[in-house]
Length: 186
Image (cartoon, rainbow, N blue to C red):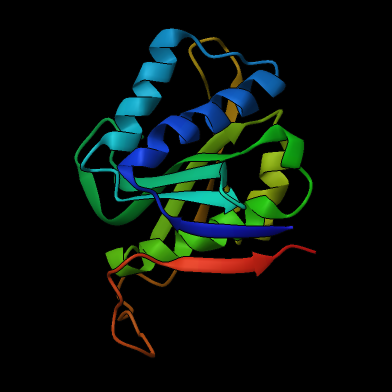
């Protein structure tokens, strides 16, 4: 199956929220209306550095968001050079087809222009599918763990892009326009 990944447009927000809602419901975590509104706000926020959607045909089937990383697990000041992946969701009827890897590749390609040296993320300890995806995409456990308000254990993973003092080497000038990847999954 082909997945086209592109920078999200405002018109994609509603469909992206539906992907998020379906994925959470399929995992037994149906979201509240308040949480759904918070997701809409995050997807529309000007500080949301990169929001990408994946499409199969004309249907939005995946969404990912990366934003500036903040001190104190996001509640503090922005940490220069650090990004945080806060959303990665694929439509449940397409799970297990490699679309998450394509989505993450599109997200990472679009964060390159931000000159981050590392990105981090948190995921539920019980979400083995997500952890396999993140490991495949170069993320490694940091050893940090915490719990969500409801008590669910979560673990942090991080991907180091380069050493903080290493210059960002690009083989081509930085492209700041929208990126479109068309990749056939196996």
